[in-house]
Length: 338
Image (cartoon, rainbow, N blue to C red; front, side, top):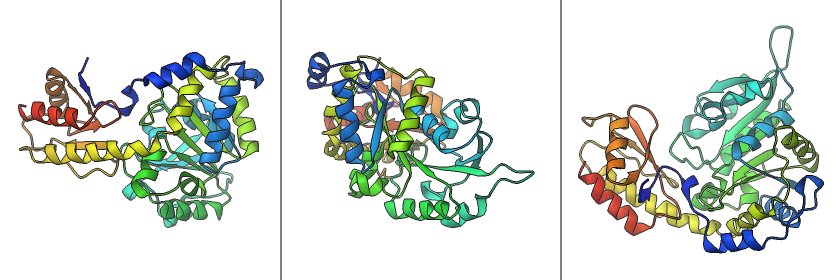
């Protein structure tokens, strides 16, 4: 194990207050709809992002997969960035779970242009599947935690709407984008038809994500959650920490500041190139170094610092609540010895 774990913001440990909330949570059977803590979490989450309704799901991947199944008919196409999480890191679920074909595009700066959407969206005909869904991601994980401005999301949504194609936002780190851009979550989500955001990343809850949209969308999503094995029982014990997580959004700015310090310190080292991060993800280019990304990750691990290889030339660090500024400085001192 690492005493400074920067592999991901999913490694956060629940706070004492979250543990207490889990122990004391008022619970019921959520499949029957009578777990009061879950119901409270879903109501608050929906209001926060300006949606009619919300659904508590075990993971962000499940939420994204359910959204795609609700929006798009089997055999239709899902338009997504080639580096999107739903394409790269969800085990081909769009095809296997939903019978959907993925049409990947290169989303420069993390998001499509309206022109790209107009060019790719089409109706079904004798030879081609129709376009069933456009998926966006904010922040964009693989592109270094890029925060996508709401006006660009709105432009894409307007273009997709002109073709009667719905838009789903994978906002696993939605609140990082909102904090970085100083945008209210409801404003960020307003242009799209559904949104997924995680409670278990920077917000620090031990488990769970939220899928939000219209009442009709969530009604069908709830049914599909059961189909995927996500119908949970006395789940208030994990929903209660999620309620506390929603109250801790502003502290994400601290993670962003620590990421900026980490990036600057790494960039100052010989043979490393590190752009200034927009949120809490730091991507290090080691292509000029006398080692590849895997060797660099191993060397960091030997010094008690956790990080992860993206490919042969790039390494990811991710700041979070459990790594303070002092730990960042210690990590830099250790990495300098490499």
